[in-house]
View 1 (tube, rainbow, N blue to C red):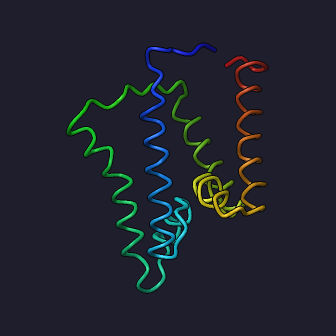
View 2 (cartoon, rainbow, N blue to C red):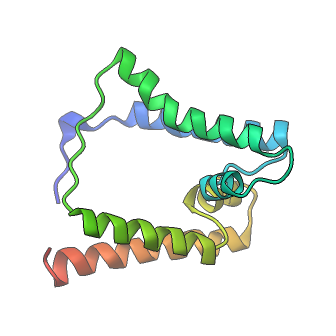
View 3 (cartoon, helix red, strand yellow):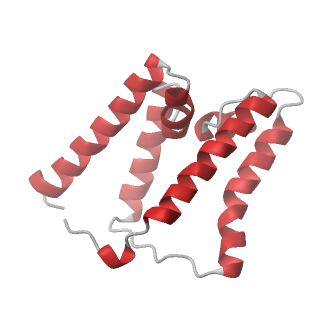
Length: 144
């Protein structure tokens, strides 16, 4: 592994992280909701009465933000080194994991850790550990 120092962008990453934190804090303070994407999307797929509006607005912003960005700047190049089968399997595993973990990385990692939730600390450590092990196995043991 090597770092492309010409593409290293700490300031934009810092700004992006600050915007995510601000958005999560605003949703919690102004709406009393946690900005966990799996919970927001899950609640939109099976909405409670009067609960779909803010969820739809949140998802529209999530999908629309890159489109607005693309109107003013070129989107970064995306390279995916996996086939469609692997992507579908990975998506299903992530979906199953978020159900068993009672949330996703955004809910636990951003919102839960900022609230000092021990459950979110355990979940985030598990997410990260599983990711480390998966990359190690795929890149170094299976060599794919």
